[in-house]
Image (tube, rainbow, N blue to C red; front, side, top):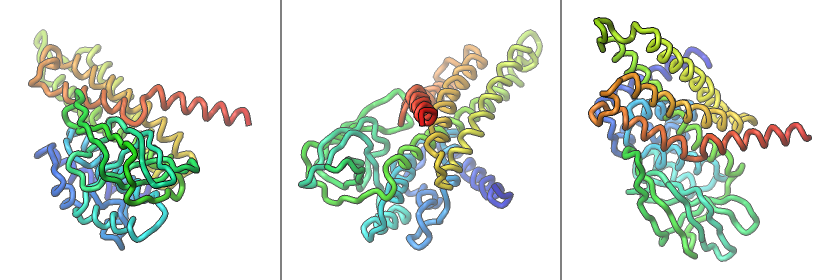
Length: 338
């Protein structure tokens, strides 16, 4: 990556960090005003014409602040899904609406089927940010087995409360409902699944970094036996282990974000590596942070529980670590047999 891009990312990270530090609860209008919702939308459609690398920076900062917003579902997934479609006037109109804030969309990825009469049936669990969305876009399989994106009303939406209160998830059920609009994917569904996994990995990286920073600061001021606890070897080693784990996560997540932006052939492998490692590592890092904060770390007032709950949910969203590792093993096995 060139130094120019690094400087731009540093500036974007600083601006996002400052804004989210003031208030981690970010409504849709603020996301629109910052220009984050249109980062990947082409300039001719009112967006910034940026790449997934820039989106990844915002996702990381949102994880660092445990931000509550509609960014994952209404921007990362919605814009990503629309960009994977074959070009059309209706697609461009939706992208323009999202970029200028007139439209909020949510994407349901589950087990939906579209029959030859253009009717949808199926269900998706844990769909992010569907509450308040203007459009519901459903990923389905047509009678020929090809993935399509359908817009439909008349579906049933049921809120799904989870331990992590910073996210809003819901179950979507379609029982033989009519599809009002159907688009075809240009390259397939895998790219959308990869970006969903990497977006969550970015979030986990950010919250792990936040917990390391908080733990190091606490260890420098908390006194025990007349000395800061950060001077004790056991605490030093624990923080060092956290730092090494985060460094590995950062490299994997950065490579996966670049793979998506560059549309590399190894994108799926890079995404699985980032998702499986970074999300599992974040749970471990937050757990160590809670222990190193001592008794206060287990209290409601410390706020560490917010990070732990979010890290645990991230580990499960869009494929668990075990699922992604299994997929990687199967891909490598298939390659060896060729």
